Length: 320
Image (cartoon, rainbow, N blue to C red; front, side, top):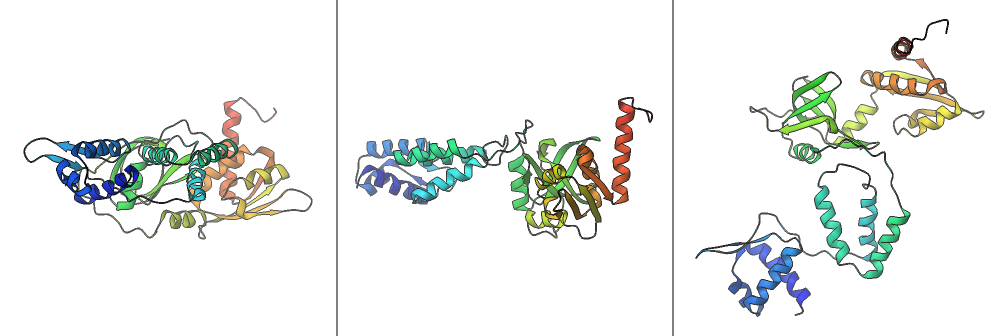
C-alpha cells in the first residue's frame, strides 16, 4: 500500500473511530507508530481536524466535524467547480466563504498540472461581473442557518428611519445586483419584511422563547415568485423610448413585461405590489425623459412629489 492509499484509508478509519491511539492505528495498518504520527500530521495539514489528549486515558480524537470520504472528479467536473466559483468572485460577503476558499485550494493542490493550467486560462477568460458592494454583510451565514433550521433570531437593523431591534424568522437569503437580502417574518410588524443584509448590525438569540410561525412559502424561490408577481397589486404601464427600453431590459423583474414597438421604443405592462411603488418612483425618476409612467396614478403622484422636492432643493422655480 503506497502512502496516498494509506492516507485515504487512515482518514476513513479515524473518522469512524473518532478516538484512537497511535498503537491501535500502527497495529491496524502494519506500520510503526512514528509512521502513523507523520501520517496524522499530513492529514492535519490537509484540514482533517485531529487533536491529541494527554494523560493515561489520552490518545487522539477527531473534532466533531464529519469528514467526507474521498470523491473522484473527472477533469470536466473539477473545472466546473472553479467555473461556478467565478460567479461569486466580486461578492464582498458570502456565507461559508472561508470554507469555499479552503475547498478550492484543496482541490487545486491535487489537480494535474495541465488541468491547473486550464483553470488559470478559465479565470483569465471568464468573468461574472456584478457591482462591487463596499458594505459588508457579516451575518449572511447566521441568516442562512436560521432559515435552514427555521429558528427565530433577534437582529439589530438600520433603516432610513433609524436603528431598531427585531425578532425575525428568515425565509432564506438571495442576491440581486451585488446586494444580499433576507425576506423574513417580523414579529414586531406582524408581517413579512425584506431586510438588506448589509444593514443588519448584529444577530443574536432572542431574549425570550418565541414560537416560530409556519411560512406559507416552501422556499425563498416561492417567496420571490409571490413577491414579484403579486396578482392583487396594481397595473404598471410605462411608455419607453428605445434607450429606456434597453435599460428596463437589464432589470430581471421589469424585462418580462416589455413589448417592443417596430419603430423603436416600447411599452411596459406589469402587475406591481403596493410595497414596490416607492422603489418604482425612484427608478423611473432616474430614467428622466426615457420613461413616461401612465399608470397607476399613485405612482405618478409619488414621482411628481419627488420632482417638486428636487426643484425646491435646487432652487428651480416654475418660470425657470
